[in-house]
Length: 371
Image (cartoon, rainbow, N blue to C red):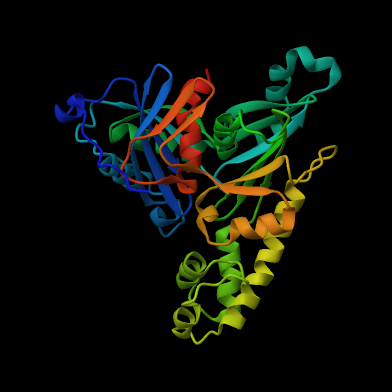
């Protein structure tokens, strides 16, 4: 796909912020993703997409997040020159720095569901430790509550305020998946599974017959798989992740230059395949357990897994899931324009908007679907 070079608008040429402009900042563990989106009647136009280092790269010696340098780098990436003029922004704090919990509201409290939920979050001590961001009705009196650490959220908001952003909403990964699912309301699949494969954890949202029926967070991601393979093969951790993206995880479809790339580390194709197969087996097993919902049968003809997150870009992930779950798998890809009912979502950048940006796209949609 060849993208046309983005032409600056009249307002941009004058150095002004376009009307109805919002920045989406997805602060992840390994990387941060930044989208700039403009809103007009019936359209969400994504006009800038950038990636920078994630939270792990901004840790001090005490493992505290240095939020000021992170915010400054985001501002540079998006091109903010005047920090006094605040640009509206939505902040997503991704896993494992965000969390979720599912609560069931008793029959006698159905009419006061929201009040009940917030009265029974003492176990998470939301007022002191966590900041609640959103809650979603999963049906059958179950509610999904998303939250982020209060201290981290507070520090990030203050730092972004200094660099030219006005954070008006804070969200967790589960909320992003909820909003993103609106792009898939009109397809032919009865059951849709949104699988976000992150750096240290993964999230699963299952939608059946246009109702959310399950959200599951799995403490497995690219990091854990790479760590085990790195130890098994004696290959440095960073190089192991590079091999994942170059060679993939499917032992049956390694590229023709696999042997050449592995020779550098004195590893054979057989050794790599064996180590990777062991880890993908564990990961896929956890995914298959996570997508299982009582009363919902995943049919090959009417079920689909949508792959999200940076981990979805690793070669072979979709093929392995398809082979094991026996359902259609497809990566998220905002190639040019997606229409969801009367809404049009447009990629007006000079880069591909793929699974790496999927959660940020979801929060770009909250301005439309969240109202």
